[in-house]
Length: 200
Image (cartoon, rainbow, N blue to C red; front, side):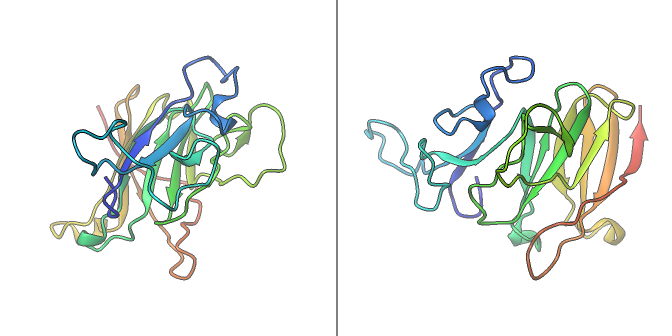
């Protein structure tokens, strides 16, 4: 649930190698998307949810953002703990790149690129649609299955405040990434490196 009280749901592209049906870019399809719905409805509600105002305005009104391959874990940088309210998403790649995407609060309709791109790199086809670049990606020398984590907002380790911690399922590595957020735009700048914390 986001700070707005709505439920956000991450949907993979359906599992076919390379997204052969182009689900992630098909705005009439829920696969390869992040959805936003309001589940604060009576138990007897026939659908069990309603679509709140302010989504992306696409043919499937539940869609908040698109262009995802396999968003495996996302979290919000909690404003209650001093965070920006942004969502940080780890998106598992197809065969070459793993990526982290940063979405400032209240920015619906963004397209994160799959299957035109894997990470920040061309994958298949081309488009004139504006795509959002990841803030960080890594190749298969570093890992093969990213797992998203959290922005640290605790008090025990002041030097770590504001860093995003994430891991890789396949290699069991854990990193932290400095988030450089523009206070005017709310966007985070791309990073070229993350600090490796542990490799078990």
